[in-house]
Image 1 (cartoon, rainbow, N blue to C red):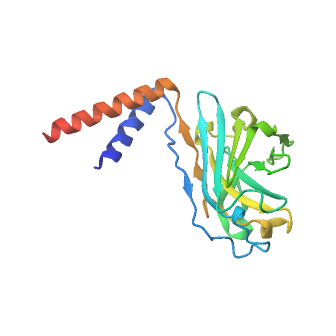
Image 2: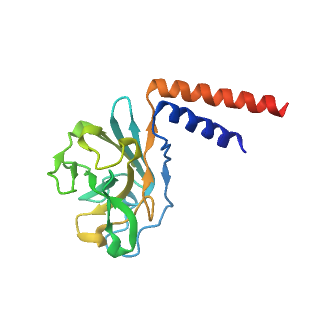
Image 3: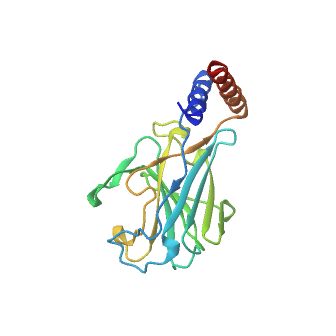
Length: 216
């Protein structure tokens, strides 16, 4: 068993002991130049996602949605960056397009230069303040309180996400340029509460010491 695997195993035991979520999550890296074949608008680099990650901070009860594109965000007029969030009741909104594992029941729609919103799921849209959105070159960050994305079955730390940039025209699936991940959702990355983090570190260190002693 590798060192990283050992640490993750002990970390999982520590989190289980605390009743904390086990979803560790990981950033999504997406290949450059992989725009969808059916995308019929201009293939501008800001619509090509290279990196995407949703982070849930248990202590502050906030989600941070971050992405990086291949070019400066805002190059494409009237574009938006849509995070599909599966809170527990997610459905395959793109099943007709062959994406049966991209599940969501609410979306966070980031609109450069416009009004960003939380929408969908049969609920009224909620406008996000401009202060919640940061755009710097090719990167976008949006900070959303967990209270604005209430559970429909999952613990907030177990939500899954997918990011797709799109244009206003054409409408529908033909206006979507990319998916990150390409064919399924990704788990959110979880920042545990400080107490959990301390136990996490302590148990992981104890496990490594015992393993080294056994090897000697």
